[in-house]
Image 1 (cartoon, rainbow, N blue to C red):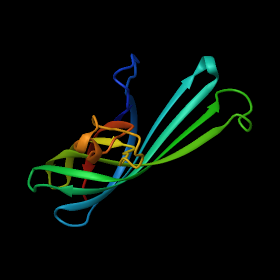
Image 2: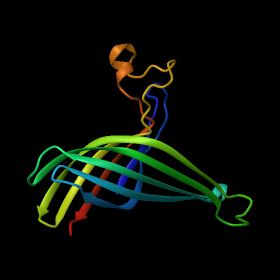
Image 3: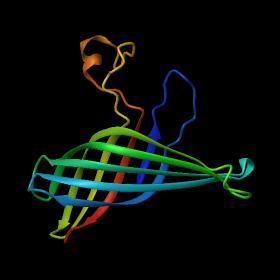
Length: 167
């Protein structure tokens, strides 16, 4: 499960809730300390008054770097993500009213996996999505200054909680 939230400007008064996604992942260990993950989540919501059904599907590929071994394994992660959104009518002809977009963005974060045995683990992580590495000189992130220019900005974040079965 993932809880995804878009970045909200805290100066504005906006009631923005996080949205729950259900999905799956495949993790492959490359070594004791490194692995890769491909995850796909899905969320669908209907808006009866607008006659619209919205489907969101983020797909992320991540490089995992485990910081310790043993039963408690903190890790860092990061990689590319493709975020697909489609809007279609609930009723009526779909051909003319279907709209679909796909955005690309980088993500990074960290987490913890607790191994409950040789073949089973539970993990939770936090990911910043749509990282912006200050390519635009007009944008000041992090309050400006040297530190603000070094830190990336982001458009959203997500908590992910899951269970992994190892073969």
